Image (cartoon, rainbow, N blue to C red; front, side, top):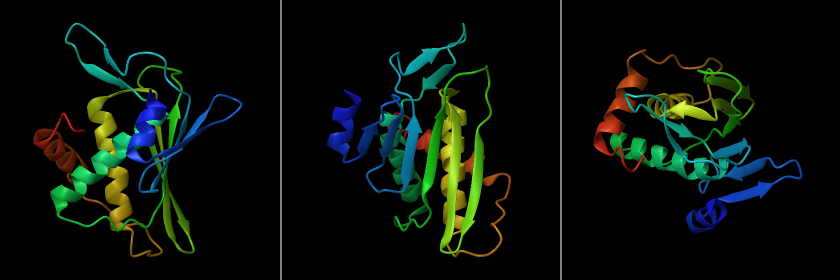
Length: 169
């Protein structure tokens, strides 16, 4: 089913001999790598029904594009991306794995690596994707130093997106 969704949304995915999925999003900005998920995509973690996402690389390409589209609409900006974002879904090794974002400066601009755990809360996932997208937007001019973001910007934008269209994200 996920590969059918990818074909519908125009994303491309390959499954290696080791079972690892490598998928490129429709716009080409995101390259996602990870193991396919055979379980449910939303998991209730405790009695308070805090929902966690189980990230499947094939579906993740669609999700990050939707978040980018919502963010660009909120900021009233065109899709003029320059930096590729490589997303790696880390298999579950321990509870509460960190999300890491690494910026890589190249002669022609910046690229980013986003490593996310396979199981993550919706809020953490949204904040991580918004953060890497805002970093890419801020660094499009390709300066030697990475732009510094105000600490309130990413949480505020993520909350605004979630309040505006939570089902679409």
